[in-house]
Amino acid sequence: MPDFQHSALIIVDVQNDFLPHGALAVPRGDEIIAQVNALSHLGFGAVIATQDWHPANHCSFAPQGGPWPEHCVAASSGADFPKSLDLSPISHIIHKGMAQNRDSYSAFFDNDRVTSTGLNALLSGLSINHVVICGLALDFCVAATAEDAMRCGFRTDIALEACRGINADQSALLQTLRSNGITLSD
View (cartoon, one colour):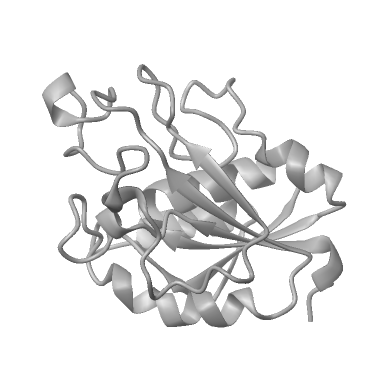
């Protein structure tokens, strides 16, 4: 049983654009919402949700030469949380990917590995030493967040039942995450 007072749930990018019919849909991404809602009510010391919050013409968008279709433009309906996500337990929201010329897969740092989102300082200020991570997409933003959580010194778990990935085969990724000390739970 985790020490909930010193643990935080991090809900990564459960946003309309990553759900079925969204601009960058994660296959079966909507299937995790019930599990995310259940986890958020377990009594964590903090429940933190992240949102991709991109400016128009963000560098990750295909028209600007990036790998992704336009998605999660700040304040758009695609960037919103879905109505089925219970927002009542969420104590903090971290916006990421806000710089036009930098993306941010991790909830901790932009992809330049230098620019902080403020999450590390927030968790430290709340006396959090353990994080449980769930959300979308397992093979991009969830994995990057977990790796950075470990680098920042947090005991790190990924709740696999509350994650979905873009790629069908996640076996190599899961092996890498385990070898890096991240606990994977069903």
